Length: 154
Length: 185
Image (cartoon, rainbow over all chains, first blue to last red; front, side):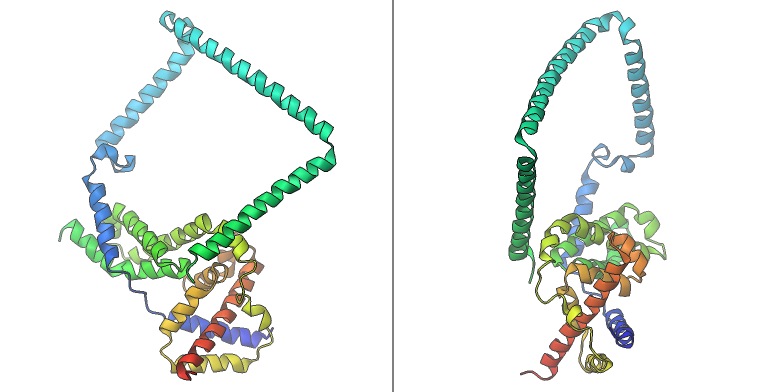
């Protein structure tokens, strides 16, 4: 590697690149952007991003959300003592029972899998891992071939 | 002047610069148009500050660069992983490490003789992402090697190697093209 050559090349490339004029943007680009802006402007305020809402609406929504959050927290805290929530709590407990049942089935399935793996032996497991890795590499390779062949502009 | 007219003038003033920044980084017209559109939609959101700001150009360039780099890392990283491994003719730097200084003088002289902007632009667009992006960030965006390494999440050594290879590849492509232009066979 010749340092003098490198320095000279760096200067020349720098000069050539910095001398490049801007590329002219396509004519339709301005129209595209203005059309998108018009579509955005035609939306009512509540369909836009929260940061674009009027200040009053933003303040009110913040207060409302804070009150709602505080109310929910209070409700969860006091729920066991509130009479009319008891049927709902009972329903929630039964749902929790279903979740427990599902979890025990999953647990049994996992322990069965663990037993099966122990019986298979290390060699088979390494083979399976290698197959999975090869499959993934093949997927990446085919994807790259597709990308090169179909999408990349030559 | 209404806001819409003011924004139109603003966009006319800066659209070529933003489009060039995106185009030189992503090297794809459709993607560069999408990025330019997103940059100006962002600019519109804060047009009340940007419209009269003397730093609007810098802001637009920074946003365009960031969006282009995000676009490249989001949509191309996986696909280019394999394609970079065996792309023929893109490792020009390796084979030319013994070049002597006469080659670069020859290159400079030929560059002066031809109307080279279009050729440079074409040669730049044909470089692979891994070479073009750090080259553009170094020479056109003025980033240091360290800043490029941090932005692209690669090692300092890789940045230096990629830029070196990019310069060599660009020089080779330009010499070939200029010779074709000046002395067509």
